[in-house]
Image (cartoon, rainbow, N blue to C red; front, side, top):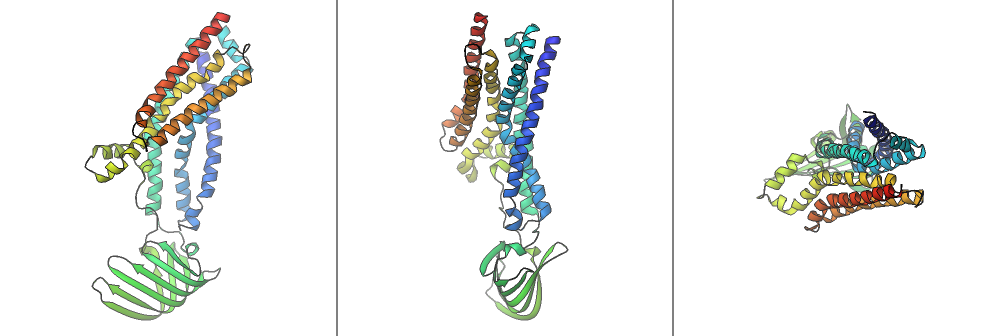
Length: 367
C-alpha cells in the first residue's frame, strides 16, 4: 500500500507540472493566435462577439497540438526535480523496485494516451466545427473597415464596391456598386453617401444616383434617386463555405471513407486518412516517450555526466515526436508511408523498452 502511495505521489506531482506548463505554453500561443486573427474583424468584417467566440473555440485545438511535447517535457522536469531533492532515492529505500515502479507508471501513461485520443477524436473536432460554423453563419459586424477608397472592394459575396473618396467618419464619394447573382445583375452609381451601423445593421445611405438592373430575361430597367438606403444584411460574408477536414466530426470522416462512389472522397482519401491518423496514431507515441524519460532514472550518473544524459534523452524524445509529425505529413504524398506511420509508435516502444531494460540491468550489476 505504501509503495502504491509513493507511485501515486509521483503521478500527482507530474500532473501538477504537466497542467501548469501546458497552461502557460497554451496561453502564450493562444494570445499570439488571437492577435494574428484580428484580421477577422478588420478585413473580414466579423463582429467583436463573433471574434471572441471564435478565438475561444480555437483553444482546444492549440492545447491538443502541444499535449504530447509538453507531456514529455513535464515528465523530464518531474524526474529531475525528484532526483535533485533525493525523493527518488527515498522511494528506492522504501523497497520499491525500479522496474515495478516504471511499469506501474507506464500503465497510467496508456490511460492518458487513450484520453488524449478521445480528446482529439471528439472534443477538438467539435470546437473546430463550431468555429467554422461561427464564420459561416454570423452576420457582418461592420462593413466600414472593409471598404477602401480609390479601390474596388469585395467585402461581401456577390457585391463589388468602388469608392473614390472616404473620410474618417465613413462619408464616401464617387460610388459604384455592382451586384451579380443568378437572378439579376444590378449596378448602382451615386455621387456621395455614408456607411452607418445602426442597431447591429450595416446600412449604406446613397445620395443622388441611379440604379440599372438587368434580370435573367435580359430586360433592363433604370431608376434615378435622390436618396436611398441599402440594408447589406441580404449579402453574406466572404467566409469559406465549406468545412475543412480538421473541422469535421470523426464519424463524418469515417462515413466519407466508406462512401467509395463519392468522387471527392477518391481525390481527398489520403487527406482524410491523414486527419484520422493525427487523431489516433500520433498519441500512441506517448508510452514510448514515458519509457525513454525513465531512462533518466536507470542510467548510472556516476559513469556518465548527468546533464549530458538529460540533454541526450530530451533530444531523442524531440526526435521521436518530429519523426511522427514528418511521417504524418509525408503520408498525404506517399501511400506506403501510412504503414510506416502505424508501425513506428510500437517500434519506438520496443526500442526504448530494450534500452531501458539494458540500463536497469547494467545498473543492477554495478550495484
